[in-house]
Figure (tube, rainbow, N blue to C red):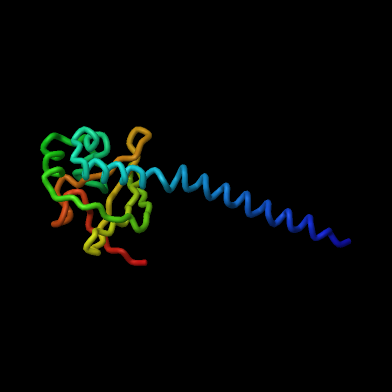
Length: 149
């Protein structure tokens, strides 16, 4: 027995609505929080706001072992002493560490060079991870990254 065309069309519309809703929830709850942390970090760097940076940044002595600590005044002064020009986040890659997950935000500087901003969840909120020993000769807050797509 043949089903009416109207029912199959409504079913098709329902599948698209459910898929769109699922993608929206995925973006809002999974993909977006590390991007928001990076945006807060870049806003604080542009404004040279030390208090905002203190809450947006965590310092890592060894990212593989998960050794993280709160930033000290000298870390924040070193960050703020650098010239900052906002770049773009191109992509996000998740890496599972021994103790937590790290989100590598593929970051392109205005001159076109590609690095990574690293974010991780600490106490229910995402913060940008700054290496204790600079990984990039260019800026303290960037991690060297080889982007292959």
